Structures are given as structure tokens and as C-alpha cells.
Amino acid sequence: MKKLAVALLFSLTAFWGSAQAADAFTVEGSAGGTLIATPVASFDSPWAMSFISDTQMLVTTKPGKLWLVSTDGTTRPVSGVPTPVVGGQGGLGDVVPHPEFATNSLIYLSYIESQDDGATRGAVVVRGTLSLGDQPALSDIERIWSQYPYRSGAGHFSHKIAFGPNGSAQDGKLFITSGDRQEQTPAQRWDMALGKVIRLNDDGTIPSDNPFQDQGELAKSFWTLGHRNLLGIAFDAEDRLWTHEMGPRHGDELNLIQPGLNYGWPVVSMGDNYSGKTIPDHDTRPEFAAPNAFWVPSIAPSGLAIYSGEMFPDWKGNAFIGGLVSKALIRVQIDGTNAQEAERFSWNKRVRDVEQGPNGALWVLEDKSGGRLLRLEKP
Image 1 (cartoon, rainbow, N blue to C red):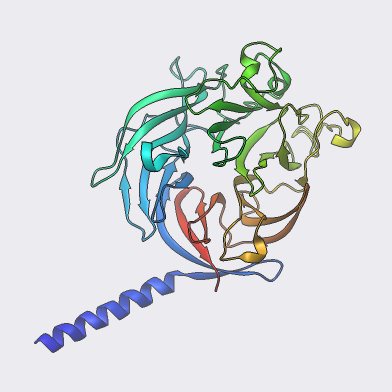
Image 2 (image 1 turned 45 degrees about the horizontal axis):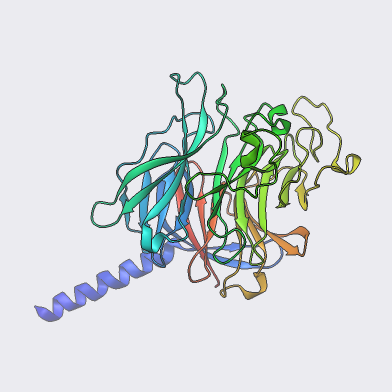
């Protein structure tokens, strides 16, 4: 009987192992690269993820759930999460741990709220204490930033978050992308925190060395201006900040973000308006910072990681961008300030977010209902 049980256990183990392996699939790149993609979990419209340890990450879903996810695929809901206003491009957004999460357990969340029953909406960033265990929970929530002013409509919130690297000049500084809310002109206004990259201390106070100190109180929080809809933000190994943003009708941009610069939207763009009305290119207005790379036709970028791992040593310093319309993971080679697309990996799914894992693997979230969390590794 014991031999039969052992044999049965061996058979079940072999079956489960083969079933798990069968879930993995190969993704061929346009420049000859190959990735093995392994599904780890799936979610209802996932939006963002961040690792909090070598074996655990947090995943948000647009409808309002926060999940504690182990790298083996175990998922547990986190209670105590604020309820977002969901609709259009809005819902629960980004999640990042504090740089000293291991000692203070703080995480930062962005989401959409309304203070007038949905007539106007805006993004907010809060932080709270994450308790781990059998029933993960978020407590002691405090507001860090609000996207002033709230506007009607449900698009171009952006609300992606990044912390400056430890030991750098930006150590402990919090960067937030704030979209133009589909209104264009606020991106050039000093009295609206729309179409901007925001820089704050970790408690939400404004650093005294921000570049715009003489344009009013609100502008003291601005790091850069002239942006459209920024859905990717990341630092590279040289502590330089990069963002990407969706262009109007094509003209998606990858930008090296430098304090005090104006990136030109809506005055200039490498794309045109949806109406067909042309927009002057960047080279017609040299006072505006030009993109380091741009895409025509659109890739609809979402999520950004600058690779620094050992699994793919030839890709160190490359940017990886999720593509929504393009349904691809896009590798961008960066050489100094020059950037150009090098390769696309496509499996016919909209890619919502991308992160580098602790062992150098790439992790991506697919968009929409049933969107999978995939681990991408070398063959």
C-alpha cells in the first residue's frame, strides 16, 4: 500500500510539474531575443506592481483591490485599502514601497477620488502601514498629495510613483506623474498641478530646492512641466530619471527628466491632434526639451523599468516599456542621452506594467480582465 501511495504521489507530482511547465511559453523578439514566459497569477484588470522583498510583491487592480503576491503565485487580498472612483482611465493606481520599507513597513498608493459625487475627479497619493501575515492589512493611512485642481472627465490622471535611489541626490524624494486631464493647456499653467512631474519629500512636504520657487505656492512642488499622460517613471543606474508619455495621435515619448525643464505639451509634439490638426514638432521650438525617443505610429506606453540585473547582462541600462495598443514589451537601448527602440517581444496581449525582479527576471502585468502576471526569463 505504501509503495502504491508513493507511486501515486510521484505520478501526481510529475503530472503537476508537467502541467506547470506546459503553462510556460516562448516569446520571440523582433531582433532575435528569446524569453520564456511563465504565468504566475491572474487578476481583474491589474494596473501596477512593486516588489517588497525577494519573494513578495504588491499588485493593484483598477477596480480597487490590492494583492500581496508571492513569487510562487500565492495571492492574498490586503484589507484597509481606500475605495477609488472607478471609470474611464481611473481607479486604484500605482503602489510602491518606501525606500526603508524593511524597517518602517510604509507603502504608497495612488488612486482616483471625487469630492462631489463624481462631477469632478482627481488623483491622490496616500501612504499607510502594511501589516503582513495571514490577513495582510493597510492602516494609519495619510494623504501625501492631491492632483489640484479636480476636473470633470475620467482620463489622463497618470499618477505613477517613483522614489529616488538610495544614496543618490534624490534619496527619499518622491516623484509623481500628473497628467493633463485631457485638457492640454493646464500642462503650461503654473496654477494647476496638471501636466507636471511632481517632487515631494516622503511625507508630502515640498523640498526647498525644487526649481520653480517664484511661480506661486503650487508651482513649488513642480519638477518639470509640459507633459501629457505619463504612465511610466523610473530611475536608471546613474540616478537619472526617465518618464514616458502617450502622444496625442502618435508621437509617444521617452524623456530624460531634468529639473526645471519644459517638455512642450501642448505647444509641440511629435504627433498630431486626433482631429487631424497638426502640432509643430519639437525642433521648431528649441526652448522646449525634445524627447530622447518617440514613436510614430503609437505604441501606447504603460509601465517602465530600466534594467540593471544579471540574468540579461547584454541588456543592462536598457529600458523596458509595456505596450498597450502595440501589444508588446518594448526594449529600448539607451546610450548616454540617446535612446532608440531595439526589440519588441509580443504575445498578442496588452502589457500594462513591467518590473525587474530581485533575481534579474522581468515581470509583466497584462491588461484587462484576466490579465496575467508573467515571469520572463532566459531560455
